[in-house]
Length: 227
Image (cartoon, rainbow, N blue to C red; front, side, top):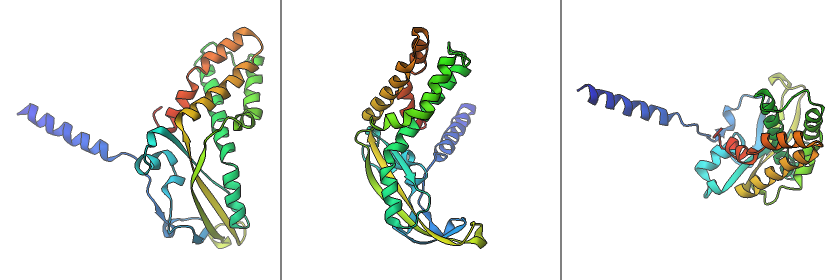
């Protein structure tokens, strides 16, 4: 009898945990509490992919496991064409920026874990400055096959009495980007190699290569929430 009761409890707990799986839902404009009012938009609801592209894609995109997904939204601009042109033009730069940031964090994690990388080593400091100042631009050339598959825009009326600095109208634009998983991993791997090759002495080069050994796989896993 006790075993039967325990089994029922475990089943109920399993059901509760599965129901807590994170979901990304469309949000009606009327529920948005901001310093602006949405006066016009390309759809009646704000797309869920803007909040979290990977989670939204896992439930709404075919062959989601083959790709990785990104979304970017501009700050308000004076007109819709400008906002959407900027969002599309900056898609590669934003992906490259995410890669550079992840590589820098990977090096920092190795330092904090005391894994043969000395944070006081001038070469390590120089490498991190390179990552911070140059890696995003260099990585943009490695982003191949990043396709913009959805676009969303809003016309917003910013209001001073809602907390805006002044009353004005602005347009924002968001893009939903899909990139093949293998191509993304290849881009991360090559970006990491840029950093390794910047090290001058063999010992530092070997330590940095070790710190970034699994960075491509870890980047993809982190975007899927698997790390």
